[in-house]
Length: 604
Image (cartoon, rainbow, N blue to C red; front, side):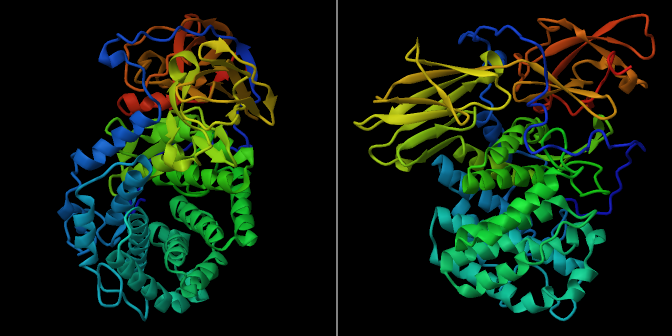
């Protein structure tokens, strides 16, 4: 969340093509098949460490977790985290009281609960935080009850994030002291609600205030809804409902703040089962999906139009989590498809080699290398918080049926399944051989149904059980296998992929392979980039397979890399070659420029 008046210089370009309206399903799902690529054999298990099979979700989670727990520049020490609660001048953004500290405890508490691990320093930190609560119930600097300023809105934002973090900790490790502190903070929000819900405040803190705009109050839906779940005190529900009624997407406003507010309305739906809140969230989703603010990467910008100059890791994490919440509430596959596309592309692209999340500057055809920012004050920890939600959505167990919904590594452990139900673990090698291995970890005595989702980007699924072909008829987008299962049964799922293209109204083409959006990276192909880069023309009919070899790097997706011949705009008589690679590979390299939309010979 950017909280300064920093101006990012971006070329004066028409962003219409890159930020054009996106369909609800993944944009390239129905693209034109260009070629069927041969599937490379699975890598040897005796590879050097730099060439080992990368687990696409777990290793990304662990990269960000290591950064938060033991990284530097800056290190998240207790004093560093407490600086926004005391508050202590010095580090950036302590006026957002409780923001970083709240996100930190919420992310680690949720990770500890979902991944069944422990963080010994977490409980002592929580004790230090709640000891700093003001008599009026809030944390940080003095709040001006009569006439709030931008600093007061900043305080409200941080306190909202802290309330959520405290409640996530309480869900992980129930604590009377933590719940009491949360209740005192909730009572503070109830006290100021009449003022904050007034038309005067709504008008005064418009989108021009950005990070200290009215979104700082709207996002209280999340904390208040979860406080109601924990206490069943109707006052918190009533205020959350009143805030939900004024949640709106205002031009130029902050995307992360708005999406957090909508996620809070989803929590209100979970707390009340009132369908009007679900309808509100579905309408908000549809509004975004039909706008020019949904990027071809599956993500969203930092600011709504016309303020969409760059991306933000917090907003990407929110968008993934909102889509997963809608999927779990409705079972509508469009939400899972968008969550999948964003996770494989924009969310992965946003993750830095350090494990941080942050900002990337948009251009009309992709991303600029300059202007990348590690937003340690919010995005790094908020990005970490998204991983447990993705992990929890890989498998779904309901009414004795086990579904494998996302082609990622993950597991459904025995504690989530009834005695007669299935549980399983998945290991993905999708990036290398288009396959996932699923191992049954427990099973009942009776036959049970195991369902495997076929994503839109896969033309077919083939399933082998214990290394033998097995019938798996497709029904409603799932391959179904009904049998009596045994612990130790192994399924190998292969996803048929091909290179696909999609054209825009300006005859620019994008390319994808499987779930991955492809682009040209200046880091990997510096010769392709120069003053007239975007005027180079690809030759889709002249693919070079296999593509040009590059040194092995972490988070590489070798199966998707495809080399194109192209005509350089600056010397068209000398045809050259460029490798298009998944944009998610950005994590394994220094921040660099990417071109995602291309002129082709067909265009001209």
